[in-house]
Length: 403
Image 1 (cartoon, rainbow, N blue to C red):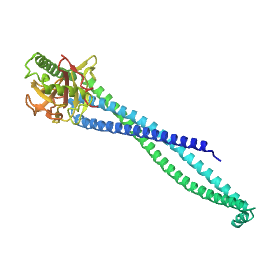
Image 2 (image 1 turned 30 degrees about the horizontal axis):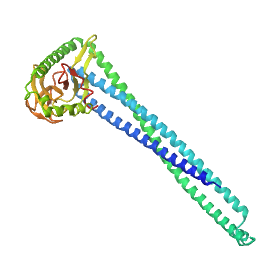
Image 3 (image 1 turned 120 degrees about the vertical axis):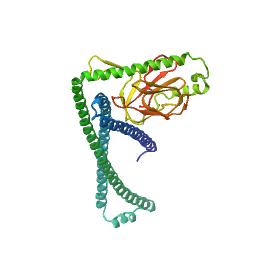
Image 4 (image 1 turned 120 degrees about the horizontal axis):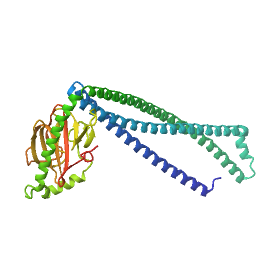
C-alpha cells in the first residue's frame, strides 16, 4: 500500500512535470512562430527582388542595377536558407520526441494489457462466480464474510479500471501516431523548401557570374555611366550641405523649426522611433548602401553614398518617413527633384524624384506622398538620406528604418 507521504510526493512530481512540459511546449510554439514569421518576411522580400529583376533584365543600361538586385536577393536567400536549416533541426527534434512518445505509449499499453491478462488468469484459477460467493458463505463470522465481500468488489473494480486504462491508452497511442504523421509531413515539407531554396540560390549566383562577365566586356561604357552618377551624387551632396549650413546659421525663431515646441516634440519622437521608421516606398529592394563600397565590376573603384538607394518601379510614390515640415524643394540638373523635410532633431532628404506633390513650408504627416520616382538612366531608384540637424554630415539611414 502507498503511504500518504509517498502519495503527496508523487502528486508534486506529477504537477511539476506537467508545468515543465507546458513551459517547454510554449517555448517551442513561440520559436516556431518566430521562425515562420521570419520565413514569410524573407519570402516576401525575395518576391520583391524577383519583380525588380523582371523590369531590369531587358534593359541593357540597367545591368548594374540588375546585379545589385541579384546581390540583395542572394543575401535574402542565404538568410532564408539559415532560417530553413533552423526549422529543419526543430522539426527533427519534434519528430524524434514524437517517435519516443509513440514508443512510450505503445509500451504502456502493452504493460497494461499484460497486467489485465494476469488478472484474468488469476480469476480463472479462482473458479466461477458461484465459487467466489461460496468463499463469502464459508466465512467464519459476519466480519470475515464482510471483508471477503469487500475484497471481491475491489477486485471487480480493479478489473474494470484496468479495462478503461487499456481503452484510454489505445486512444492516446492513436493520437500519438496521428501527430507523428503530421510531424513527418512537416519535416518533408521543410526538406523540400530547403532543397528548392538551395537551387534558387545557386541560380542567383550563376546569374551574378554571368553579369560580371558582361561587365568586363563593357568596362568603358560602365565607367562613363559611373562618372555621370558620381557627378549627380556630388551635386546633390554639395547642395544639401549648403542648405544644412544655411539652416544652422539662421537664428530667426520663425524659421528655426527645431526650436519651436512642435519641432521639439517631433524631434524627440523621431529619435524615439529609431529602427521603426517606415520605408519611403511601399515596395523596393535596397541596392545601394550608405558609405564607401567597391564597385561591383570596375576594379579599384569605390562608390560613396551619403544615403541609401532603393530600386523600385518608375512612378512609385515616395512618402515621408516621419511627420515634419518641408524645408526645401530643389532641382538637380540632370538628377531630378529633391525634397528635404525637417523633423526637428533630424532632416530627411528624398532624391531622384520626377514629380513633387508638396510645397515649401508644408506640414507633413508620416506616410504622406512627397512625389514619384524617376528613372535617370540606371533604373528607377528612390534615394534617402538622413542628416542630424546639428551635424555637418549625414547618418546611415539603415538603422533608422524598419528592417
